[in-house]
Image 1 (tube, rainbow, N blue to C red):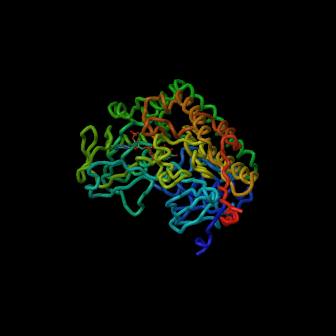
Image 2 (image 1 turned 45 degrees about the vertical axis):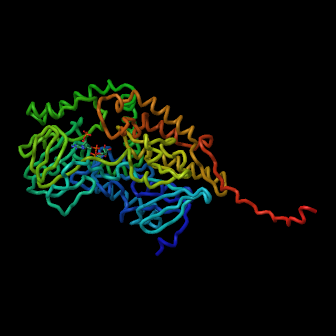
Image 3 (image 1 turned 90 degrees about the horizontal axis):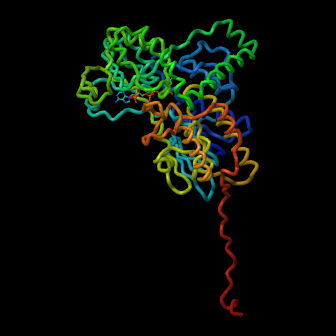
Length: 508
Ligand code: NAP
């Protein structure tokens, strides 16, 4: 019942992953308590709740892949697994008193800007509400993408996606087809290979894979990080600094990444002795163009006798036969799609209708565009966490999220300073200029020049996902809201009805 009593809020946050919980903490820290966090599931965690596939872990070290304001001296490993990251987010929720704000099972069906009242009308699975400000923290990796494969409906076995793992289905002893070779697939393959009867990997494009410097964090390190927080901060600082130094190779001098390819090839050579398989697994594009993957177990798994690598995409399914684009066929009892997410066509955009009645998806039909990764023209008081061009190729997304939280914090402050019923709407000229500069810088990056296709690029080949700079630069450009980049909207004046004089009086 409590959910339905709350009809109007100052802020509605959508999603309770790192972005949404971070936004909630920031709002509370600024003394804003009149907000809700709308979550479609029944627990927090976002992508770290939804991705529970075998072997799921983060390939950014945990001491960097965590909030600066919620350090965890107890991380068990350099690269902690999904259960630990999920548990961390649950703890953040409790530590910062976020539970009263959470509205579970509240998938947002639609958001519509009301220009008269200057607020958002929000329809959710748990009822409607209105909000002065909406913070969309749905994340780019939330809606699984399954390719449209002819005949898939005819497959008699189990079909699943990496981000929707069915723990009740037992893969042991089964013939499993793994589709894709992205960050998710290369973790699943070694985790299931020992148990399945046969594993057929459909590899459309081979990834670059580097060794993973993972290890347990010792009890002594944990003790030190607890007793002497400066050691924890130093560790985080080092992890961050190294990655900042790598950025220019990705963004300006992709050729400098060449020697890393040598390391990756060597890494493969150690595990894969068959030259034909090595040839099939060797990428033909510059390292870094797609996300660089880290694994010590992927190549050894592929070299096992119960694994077949089909160096082609999955083209068609005929009953239990899977057909590759090279014509090869494989029998399977189960198909696991590790085929990624709707990133550049995120479904939430279809549900948001802005000031002139168009949806964000329509606005973005030629490619996502925002101002400083946060706001879009025509969508007043609507901010996105991990919006367009805020992704990273080599560092922790939590750094980018925290920069965006600074922007959100200042956005809320500006609304307060301006006072009254008010909204800020990004000027189209500001959005255009931000993106012109951004795309200009993008031209030299490895993501655009490296000779690969990736989820960083949209259907038009435009990179609308990655930030072409350092995290410190992004932090600097999102520290404050520049009011010159916004139109300030106030409620339209209601027409005043003047007493109408009688005709006779007028004549007199
Ligand atoms: P992804 O990187 O988008 O990979 C999708 C894979 O599916 C690609 O290899 C793609 O091939 C392949 N694919 C698509 N259609 C296919 C078809 N018909 N036949 C064969 N293969 C097909 O998705 P993801 O692995 O889920 O990763 C997404 C992002 O999530 C990552 O980049 C990363 O940011 C994050 N993530 C991180 C971690 C981690 O921290 N360790 C783990 C998982 C995910 P092409 O390459 O040819 O397009």
